[in-house]
Image (cartoon, rainbow, N blue to C red; front, side, top):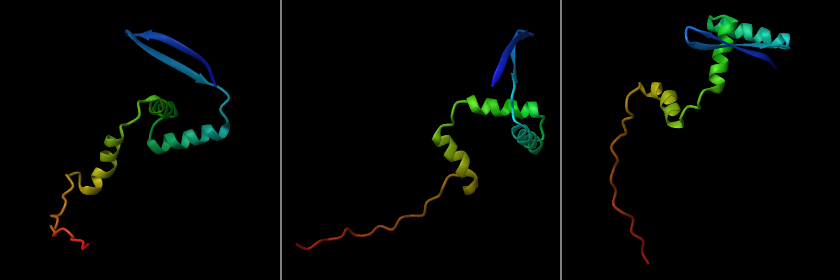
Length: 92
C-alpha cells in the first residue's frame, strides 16, 4: 500500500520518493535475498523492480532474437540446400 508520494525538485529534475507500509516480514526477507543476489541495495532492487513493472513490453520478435540468437552463435541461421524432387503423378 502506498502511503504517500513526495515530489521534490532537485537540479531541475523531478525525483519522487515512495514509502510503502505494511510489508510482511517474508516479503522484506525475499527482497533482501534478491538484492544480495544482484549485488545491490534493497532500495536499488525495488527501483529496478518498479522500472521493469511499468516498462513497455518487449516486442515478440526482439524477444525471440534475444532469446535464441546466442544458441546459434549470434549469426544468421544457415539452412541446408533443399533437394528438388519430381512432382508426384496420380493416376485416374
